[in-house]
Length: 56
Image (cartoon, rainbow, N blue to C red):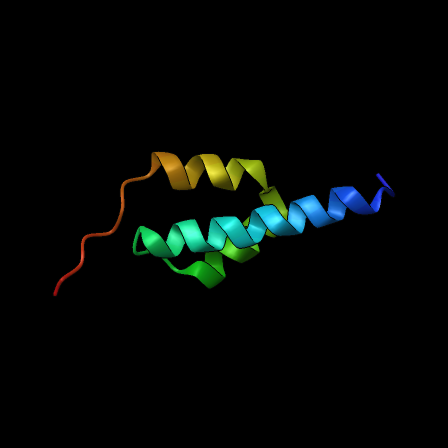
């Protein structure tokens, strides 16, 4: 677990999740933080949960 590649990959995944969440109308910051904690599970949740409908 001291492999630097692991941390780079986890950080990259969190940034991808933040962008994916924003594209679905959700808070990128909150999903970025969630991704730092639960990683791939957050990815699954973002993909499964429906997007937020825009009011405009």
